[in-house]
Structure formats: C-alpha cells, structure tokens
Length: 251
Image (cartoon, rainbow, N blue to C red; front, top):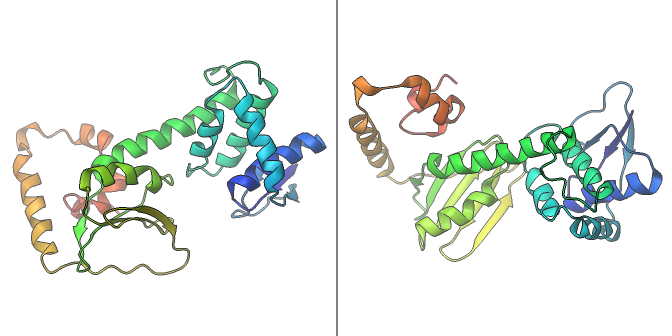
C-alpha cells in the first residue's frame, strides 16, 4: 500500500494532492513522518513544491464547496492520527465533484469523517474559552498552561486578546510546546520545539489561587452536586490544569 510522506507543512500537504492526481497514484495513507511505516507500506516521499501546491489550492477555491480550503486548513489542526489522510480524502472528493457543494453530503464517509474533525476542534475551542486558567507571573504577564487534544492555541488567542485587552499574556500548549503570546498589542504563536519553557509565578499567585478555589467551593451547593453532568461539560482529562479541580485529577 502506498503511503505518502511529506514535511507537515500546508504546501507539502497540497503538493501531495498534486502528485496523486498527476501520477494517478492515490495513497492509502499520508503522514508527516512522525509515525513509522507499517509492514506492507510503500513510502513515497513527496517534496514540497509551492507552485504545485498553489495550483491545487486554486482548484479547491474554484470548486462549488466554497468553504473547502478554509475547512481543510482548520481540520489539519486536529490531534487525530489519521487527520492528514482524512483531509486528503476530502480534498480529493471536493476536486472530483467540483461542480457541486459536497460539504453536507454526510452519506459519503469522506465527508462524514472530515466533519467529525471539524466538530471536535470547534467544540474544544469553545470549551477552552472557559477552561483556561491564568496565573500571575513574576514577569508582569499572565501565564496559562493546558494540554488540548487538538492544536487550537492560535484560535484561542483572539478571544483572550479581546477579553484581556492591554494586559500581556501567554497561553502554553504543553502537549505540543506551542506558545500563544500577546504583548498588549500584537499576537504571535510560536513552536518552541525541544526547548524547555520556564515561567516563574509571582509571590501573590498562591494567594490568588487559594482565593479562586475558595470562591469555587462556596458557590458550589453540596446538595445539588451532579458529578456525572459536571464531567460531561468539564472532562476529567482537563482537571489537571484547573486550580479548583487539580487535586481531584486522577492523573
């Protein structure tokens, strides 16, 4: 089975689509090289070509599925292992059916699986607008760490920029070592790679943290607790990054 391997960039991904159509060799999988090939896989290493990628993007933008290009770039932020092949299959389906809008054709597995990625990312962005907990650093900025299932930091930054206005902050995705930074004016998203990110909290932070936990415990009515419903809206896997729940986190 043919497996395309590319460099993980957007241009590299769209180059894979160009190669598939030009060679008529459509892969059974596509990877950014982070995972190993399995027995029986025939790897085809696709070299990124910006010109080829732009031709594919132009074709997708001309298709009747008007949101396809935007949605594909969005879905590539998924944390699912099969995200690239799911996006690839959807892009190919859009191009082959360029005269009709296929975005709601859920009877087709390509579309259904692709929309599952979109939904999961959108839901997690919505959740973390309420789950991010900032702490005061000794560097005069706010710091928040979290470990989302999907790569969503860039999509959270506009929300918190609007909420915090002129106050500098950093949102740190510890699962990917990605930093969303705001200096009170401009926003930047940086991949720190293998570098260690160290942030020292202010002397007052423990006080603020305890104050927040006290507030949380006091507004919680013991007789009306619904643990099952709470876990539905506040998944247990997020608790370790929430001051009010981290002591109850199972891991």
